[in-house]
Length: 612
Image (tube, rainbow, N blue to C red; front, side, top):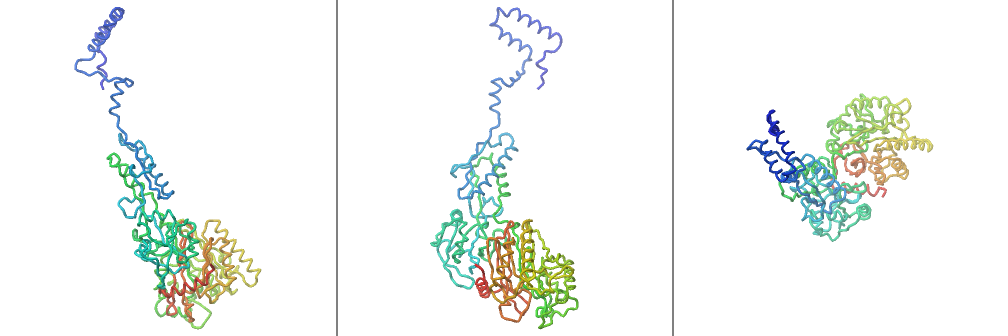
């Protein structure tokens, strides 16, 4: 505003003003009553006709009343309801994200767009925003990925797969039994926690199963151990190594490539913004985007790491003849996809590559492999080679050195053997998705000519020529395992042990394998067995006493044709499960996945040979 209108201009004007003021001073005592009229006349003489009087300064009551009517109005408080069946951690996560979105919105809001506050209420009818558990796929989902639930049973159960329709019939009480992989029907007991039941009933309808048992989640593992026909319904994060996770419609929660939305046993979190006030629309968009971005599923594939452990590989004799006849990749063609489906694929190759080798020589116990056979290992994308085998130096340690150079050229890691004793005991190290793995192994079977020395290549030894020497070496490996664990590694220890043709381990084998578990290894695996052997599961880790043959042909009975591939699953740095994949060797050279009857026969034998 131009303030010049408040100032009489020119010297004449100031003389007139001075005269008026003098008159006021003279006549004030006798004419106080006329002062207001005089002031009004004075003002009119100063402010030109037709112009408005300037507004009063702040502090004037008229000004305050005027500005109060034009101040932008804030939006009223929002009322928030979170369904009480939503677990404590998720509830707190939602509240934390709501606070952040609220503060960010108000900080950026202009004029009357700000929201005055918010409060939690306990009645959804009175709420402006309602958060509820819901079936996945609804229009109000605020989760990028849903929360996964699983069907778990005992590790030693033969119930392995179920259709979604069968589960819903079981849930509703229409059926009470399920078939195992042999086709035998079993009456099953459903087990779940009370909080899980509330959510499941909200999303899938009331449970009508007469055989339903409610118990604390921490007691479920014991219940599954006591009843191998019990099936637990529980969240993904409750999975542990004592359990077998049942596939639903052939889908496994451990399949990292599983298409989003394919797996049915999931729940989500919905947000219903009930207040339709237009002023809240921008805040709703911000809140929904923040929640969608930051509400994380209980199953994050990027946090999962899988390790495949295999048994005996010896590319010689019958299998070498078949490779020469049918092509180098022939042995792996029926199981290649299985071996590729892992972050780390382990192969225990017991035979060195030798130039001009007659690998297909029959009826011999002196083994060699053609150098070109390494293409088989590349075909299955081998990540780590175990060198504890007892035939590595059959043609002399110089050929093991030659073989190690080939692995180095192909950038394939190895452990359990080396160009000297120091190299042989070094672990193979990996870091995947933040998980650090250390593979370490030793040969306790011998022969002594196969063991590495200070100056020659060979396998890492556990010298069993005397009890004293064995104990000295065992303590050395226990210390190595312990130090690796302290350094934050998940330790996988493998033995080349005494070969026995039984499904059950020997007493000494149990003792030695358990020692490495107690020292800090999470997985202990026997690479020596030509016949698969039992397992042992403890709070410390998982033991496979023997996995059987994978790429080695023997002419004996079915036991040496049976094989195990152990798929160990790690989540957020913890071993949570192991799946035993069963194989059967045909044509003395080519393993294939077993049929259901063959799988049942092998698993029953393995379970009988297990330490339980």
